[in-house]
Amino acid sequence: MEHEVNDDNIDLMNVWLPYVRKNFKDFDYRNYAIPKNYKQLSLDSEFLVMLKININNREGTLTELTNMQVTLRNLIGKIK
Image (cartoon, rainbow, N blue to C red; front, top):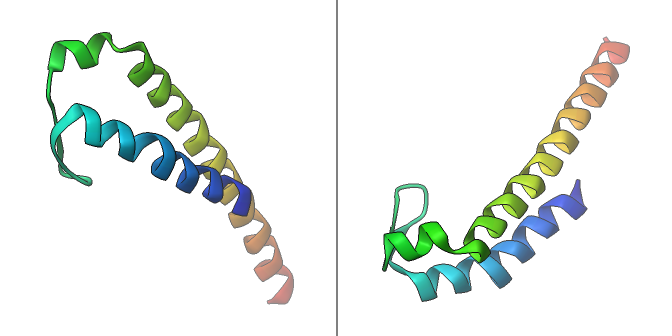
């Protein structure tokens, strides 16, 4: 689990934030992101690959969280 969270943090700091600073006019986390050029962004293979990598990283994190939840529920069931 720790590995997946670290991957997410590294990806955010080293890939996403520099890209957003360079290619977006304005950005408010979880609210909006306004690209400098919508058409260029939609054709940018780097951006599309970054999205795919982000999805893969998130899926790994969610899988680990789901596994942890099952383990904890089993442990709680044995304690009761």
